[in-house]
Image (cartoon, rainbow, N blue to C red; front, side, top):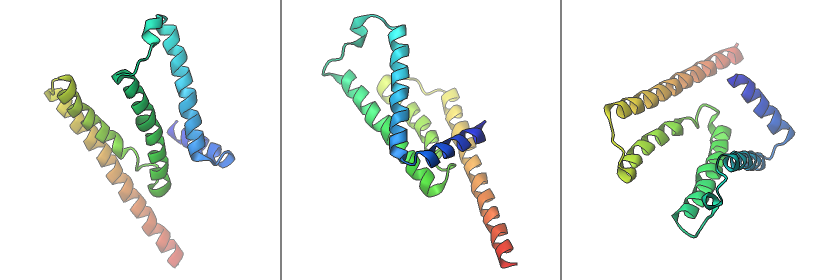
Length: 148
């Protein structure tokens, strides 16, 4: 399944090479779909009213940095380092979510949350370590073939 998605994404980029534009369109259509589901789920007009407050700031900040910035940085990282590099930052978001949730929302940090963070971060970095070793081994065999 994962390989099919990569093949599909590479076909899209061959046909439509503007990466930032295609990322923006992905976010736009995702936002439209989310808005439609939200309208179906919450029909009360007061739910949809925005004012100049923290709620509006949160929406704009999340849209600008958490979504658009993430897509641009991920595209750049994939272009420079390959597709296994950007997932390294997902583990950091789990750590930051746990810490900031405790600081700002008063969530309790339990043994389960600490173990969860350790297993997620450890598993991801173990995978990335093995992937790096695999890529290095592949480079050695390519050099041996070219030397023959």
